[in-house]
Image 1 (spheres, rainbow, N blue to C red):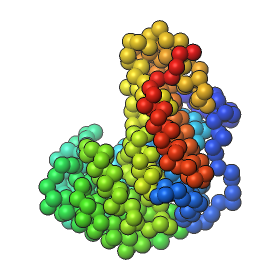
Image 2: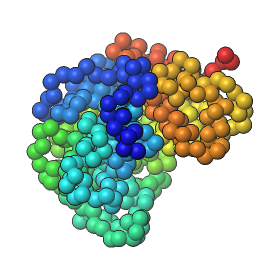
Image 3: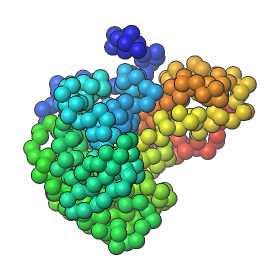
Image 4: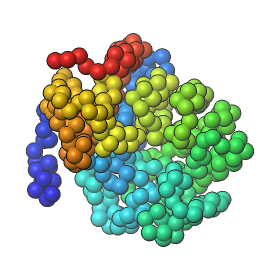
Length: 404
């Protein structure tokens, strides 16, 4: 493993010469955190989130590195695909290896060999979905680790303290994320608690010129609650705004309706981040409503389970129809995983449960997601976003690529 890691630091990954076309041109590093809107097309926005460690070109997809690693990927590969930022998770990193240990080892960027921007979420969603015997109060949330049952108390102040120890560039407020469907009174109670926690997180975060804390709009599937949450957070004058609680089982139509209500309220001169979303179609529809940033485990999780995303739609490599197919996933792709391996071989790897299958399909999927984002950025700049969206969807609808 050491030899491989040393090689990745000195030698570009296979295909890097083809795949770094979308990398930003280096500029002198800014000392402040900020957002610049470069172009609009309808509600779709092309911009840049800038900070000392680099610039995030928006619309942006952030690969998820939950435990300080994007699963089955080398950091250099992730960067060469065009990713400007990755996501780390406060809940998982506080449990293992521990925020204080990461800090003592030089911070998360050094620890993970990723010197570019990192966003950390607050851990609130993982507490809701993973932790045992959680108990919510005004002070915070008491819970037991899903790993060993150890008891912890996560307050808004402690969430920010952990994220500061990790050294992330963009940090999230602690919020209470309610699973849908839920009663309106429960959704409103959680939204109001999240607003009070946002104030406490803002105070704890303080003044950090090169970093940012984002607030999280909550309110479930109730438009008036989303509006109230968005307006209250806007009044706090934060550096960015996230829209949470929309990857918890609701239909896409509900998510899009909430974005239609929420995005127009948020400041035009601040980045907007839709948390935990989603499918390629989700991303395109959200961009058309004014969202700038996304994260989701879907491309890597799907890759580990034999599912590939392509410009022709999804390809299930567990399906026996691929076992004698010599075609690659996409012969025109810049990604070697999509271009240089047959479907028959990928089917074999998946059915044999070989790690290389998960590696290649994760690589392919992340490459496709980054290509999708670059296509949207280009289309917004050219003033043809809606035409581009229709063309991409037509490719999905036509289905699999023609025979070679």
